[in-house]
Image 1 (spheres, rainbow, N blue to C red):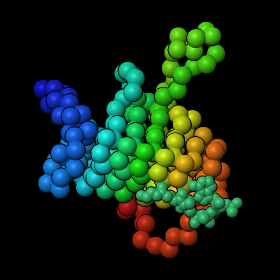
Image 2: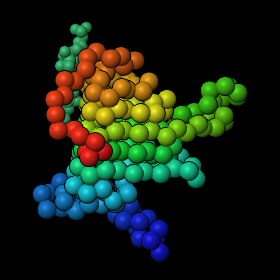
Image 3: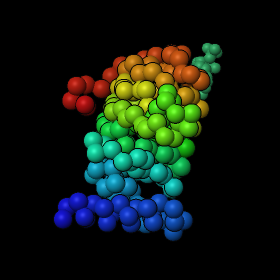
Length: 186
Ligand SMILES: CC(C)(COP(=O)(O)OP(=O)(O)OC[C@H]1O[C@@H](n2cnc3c(N)ncnc32)[C@H](O)[C@@H]1OP(=O)(O)O)[C@@H](O)C(=O)NCCC(=O)NCCS
């Protein structure tokens, strides 16, 4: 019954996410709540228009867990087919793409016949994935407070508080953080 309710709410979200009606302030709140449900029930979650949140391919081990305070910009795409854990106060900006599956290239020339590999991704507290950045399936962790610059393609784990940029993304800096990010935040 619980699963049925979740599926039903997810289907309503599929309608709401693309409807410009749900851009209206009051209805936007409803869309945020539906999106949060689709992501496993996070509180204080704000999600823009046309955000794609789904398990892109069937995987019986797929899961999604999201902490409070998530912000997702319009046109972002979040695939949790490999399993996705998002910490608290994470931002995924406009048109960013998060993948947790990859296609196996070796084998048949028609790579579409070779099947898929899945990988679990953790995006830790306070991380910011910039606009149009792509997180590929090889990435297992985007560390706490890390920043992924706009348009980057991330192929390796991102250390905590690192700033990564480019294609492929490399560390270009480190955030200087003084402060309040105590263990109780995580
Ligand atoms: C990464 C970012 C936060 C800047 O961080 P910063 O620490 O101030 O970085 P700097 O500007 O000092 O740049 C450091 C290096 O990274 C490069 N760089 C910065 N942003 C880059 C990007 N998006 N792609 C490629 N390289 C980038 C700079 O050219 C510089 O290279 P150099 O040392 O060879 O000159 C910013 O460029 C960015 O991408 N912000 C995200 C914007 C966004 O997504 N907005 C959505 C609004 S919600």
